[in-house]
Image (cartoon, rainbow, N blue to C red; front, side, top):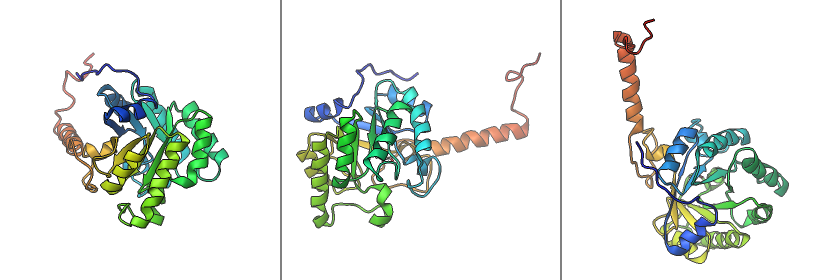
Length: 273
Ligand code: KIV
């Protein structure tokens, strides 16, 4: 039996408040009902339906082909399971970039049809007008700067950002502009720790790091990475807490052996009359 941690509902207001108090925020991704329920029960602050699902659930090479419908289906399943954590839905590639109107329509669908409580958009100063409008309309926004996977081809791969110092001012200005626009939080992905620290000190929104060191106000990781579901990718910043891939293999082999040897099903597992 898992222990249920009694606590208040986490809202977008909790994020900057926790930053002020120096209390770190823990967020994991989830894509299905039962995983989300476990994460919520064990006290996660946020459950994010990341477009990483396109890679870690559907096996695609990038996040680029994630569609609105796919993201909405998975967000609905997660939102149905979560009681206390904040449910954040990732807006997929081209669901917000074409125009402010497109962004409003699609972000609205996440709240209205899928039960999300906030949306996350990748991009810096160039998407601030869109972010402002969404927030004005009551749609909470989390920013996402640094190594933004939807720009993977422009960036030339998952490269650490902040090493070419001339680009640092872009990240700092972007973080400040997103903060000013009213974001409650911002993901800082694959950034040098000194750059993430500087941004964290300059903004009132909570910075949530992924591969950006320990100075952020919180951390987010992809659930499938930390439970060890696969062996083929293991980024340096991911800490593995379990080896679920090996457990699945053990269960599958055990089942196949039992079926083949006639041990499954037993009489107890059958309806004899
Ligand atoms: O897609 C995703 O899962 C993400 C987070 C890990 C930040 O963007």
